Image (cartoon, rainbow, N blue to C red; front, side, top):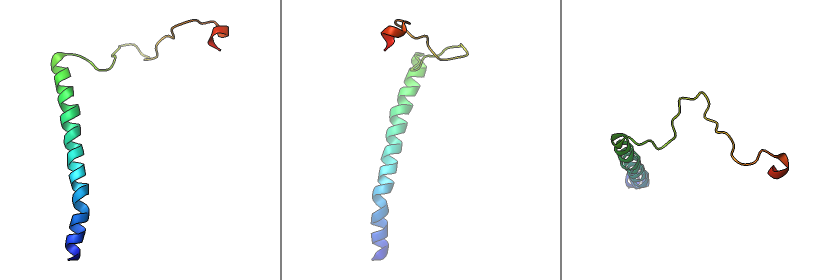
Length: 65
């Protein structure tokens, strides 16, 4: 009887891992494949050395604070 108790303790964990893995693969994987086929990028891509963007707005210290 103890073996059945152990098995029933592990079943929710196994089911959760399977569902989360399927959700990730189907959700992220399918979206990734579709966007690659369409040729669209989700993130900005640049050939610049740095990814920092220039700040917009006023450069006056009095207006910043």
